[in-house]
Image 1: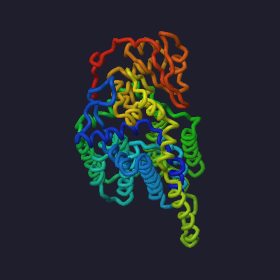
Image 2: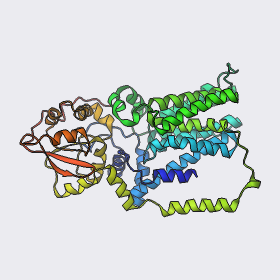
Image 3: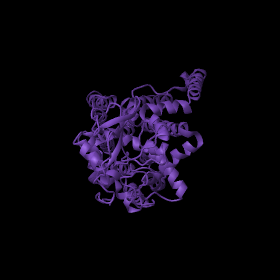
Length: 484
């Protein structure tokens, strides 16, 4: 049931703007037999230092591409999503010992995960987070377990995605929650023994040291701090960093879960322990602050929900219907195989979100000047046309450091867009069909205005009707600000 849900919702969902430059990064690393240390995809920040903190995840997706093209990329995404949902179910089942409430909890939090139902590198991070939680859960429940696996896990994690920092926070909360030795009011204690605390703290310290095993050393370790403290425009203007909207399905589910916890505390007199309370508060804070962390909240909250629903009768093998279960499972597997992503279907999905038509147009009419492009399309355009150099793409950190993203936002906010386009000597503007930028420039006709070279339901390419200004901006004039 979980796998069918994932497949139905994530199939042909390839709208993530980052996947294109991730694939391009992997191809470049394999071609040059080395790590990426500077930009080579844009004309605005070309050659500036940059660290690729997600190179390992990129290689995984690129392997899918090399094997099966874009459908192969989707298969990798579906496998990761399916593995995560099964992991959430397993974590919930181990917490309550009852498969029925565990499945119910996984189904309830599944819509929260849909914020990342796309080929995202963060999925690798969530898989590793689940691995760590399972190891810590086993250690807590049995008093023993292979804690030695956690430092290598973090070694892989820092090379796969920056969400390792969330993993350290969760790990620290689990350790701290076992320090109180007695109940405090309505909060129950679940203390660690002295030996367990030593083992956990040693593992935590080893995990921090393991983070240095990456191609960029301490800079990759400090990158999450760089994002939190310096990348203000990125966090303020990129949609996934926005605060949670309670009118959305995910927002309503979070509120419903909080209400269910309050009701359960009153009716069933259910007492949270320190660990459950710490993880719940962290999950709520993270998801309320940034919508992208709804997925994180789903992973952390599901085990608690399973315990709340543990009034459902335990599974009884005597009531099992193996033939019916087998038929249902076979039907699901046949459906997945029958509706497997095809190259044509994937291309159609891509064409609905990205300017696929302009690539063919540019093959016949190559642009003869600088292009100012919609930032979510920069990676796609470079992936489809290796010779294309974008103004900006969704590697927002790189462009924010150099002041390029600030100027991009000024144009999209209609703050003297002509003046800013003149500054960079822009000849072409490629933006969505319904963008205010497109509508404003289309109204500027005549010798000093703009003309439409190409238009389709997704994008519009505008070109200056008159001479292109020389531009006052130069690549070496933008402020140098490299990460740490």
